Image 1 (tube, rainbow, N blue to C red):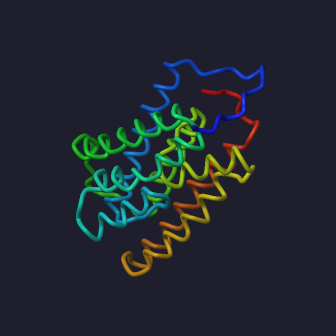
Image 2: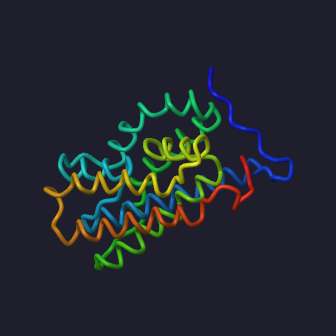
Length: 209
């Protein structure tokens, strides 16, 4: 039986269904665009998205397909520890990123994309998208599920936990990425996770889904 989450305080405002849906739509669109910017400049992010990007560079298989498949094992943890509602929202979010990552390539084109600009904007989009999802009790699979679980159950800050995991993934990309792209990827990972660490503190945002 899935573990139940602690009941929110009485003063907490609950998100309406349309608010959850809008946050999921915009958050996944932001992340898909951020991933496209990263892929066009051979950058790498962390978490399962970063691992999926790395595998797509090596195998030439589309990012969205790898991303969807690699997240499948983590739904069991989400179901058992965070409940079926969170699991359902996370599955939908992963599916949307998979779909939008393919469609965004048809919607957006870049004649020139500076790597430094791509790092700042791409990581900013991904960090903002993840923040929107997190605040509406939605993860993006993989490490996001672990990060939310550890923060809610043990008080470990989601952003700092993800930063450690992301740096480990980036270390594994040493033989795949050029040195300048690897350095920029580390900067991008820091931007994403600091965005979460600063803005997703327990008790700071009182909306609940």
